[in-house]
Image 1 (cartoon, one colour):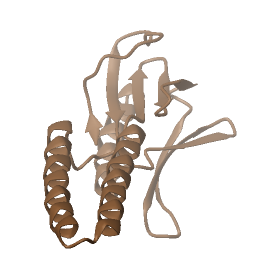
Image 2 (image 1 turned 30 degrees about the vertical axis):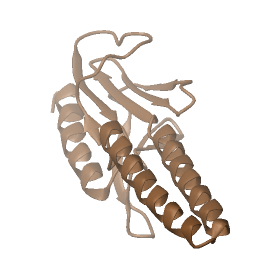
Image 3 (image 1 turned 135 degrees about the horizontal axis):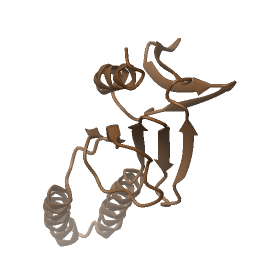
Length: 167
C-alpha cells in the first residue's frame, strides 16, 4: 500500500520536498474487523465445544481451543509484521530511503538524486522489483508491494525524479 502524506520523525530533508511516499504492506483486515472475526470464531468454537462436551468428546474441546489460540497468534504475528514501512523522500539535493522493520528501529540510506539510478525490473520468477543504485551500491525496496503497486509507484517516482533533474 502506498501512502503519500505522513509524519516522519528524524532528520528532515533539506530543501523543498518534491516527492514523498510511505510504502506499507497490505492488510486485509482492519483492527475492528479482526475483533469481529475473532468474536465470531470464539462463538462458533464455544457452540461446538458445548455440543462435543454434551456427548462426552472432551478431547475435541481441547483441540478446538488450541486451534482458536493458534489462529489468534497467527493473526497477531501477521499484524506485527505489518508495522513494517519504507519511506521514500525526494528533495532537490537528496533522495532518502528509510526502512523501519516491525521492531521500529529505522535505518536510512541517502542518495544524490542526480546520480541515483532507479529501476523497476522483472525478476526471473516474473515479479517486479524496485531498486535504487549509485556508486556501486544497490538497494532493493518495496518487496511487499503487489506488482501493480510497484508499477504505480515507479510511474509516480520516475516523474518526480525527472522533474528533480530538470528533464
